[in-house]
Length: 293
Image (cartoon, rainbow, N blue to C red; front, side, top):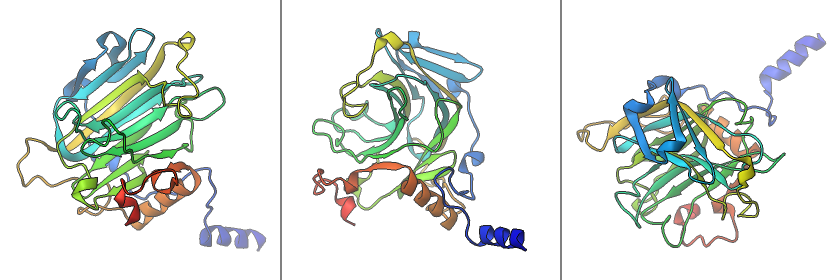
């Protein structure tokens, strides 16, 4: 009888501990085909610090250079993802990134959507930073829209899948198909709408990356290595016809998240979000009006 009651309680009141997220109930990564690195991407800089083996890309940073890559095509919407594994140990000051940008097409006035691993010191977890820049807010006087997370797993131990879903209505960030952030379009002034390319890179950002620049890159621990595989980039390219329909991260063709996906996202933000720009009292929220609505 006691066992029956225990099972009944588990079914009626499922665990909400901080160990692992609830199932999102939908796995968008399964809906898109992977591609080889060379089919969808090319080296952008640091070619001597980049290698491809069996469709897995390795890039690294040492005191001479980092490395970066870029998609062959620009997109105006889509699902963009990769499985990534970052280096353990002392990685302070080092950024490993997967992002969308049009900074080469619009220098000084660009849009950008970021997933960034902020390097760390011994015994401390990586911080996963998501960010959105709109029409130059990442140029000159920086106006970031950062949300940061300590993940529910160690990203150095295995590959995990990181994704950006970008449509004219919303941006959704996902980790292993769990939505961690949704950034809806509330106005054209606060949302990136111009075509962007897909990028990845590893570079030295010692001035700000780790605890606001307190800890710098230490090259006695070089090389700093990042590995990428299972690349996906599917959606409407910048050259697609006007009738090309944006893809979705949920069962709803029109976009948005299901109730189960929203529940999983709330769990992540409750237990694993460590910074939200909208809740930062030091920020001038006149510059981020989306926080007020």
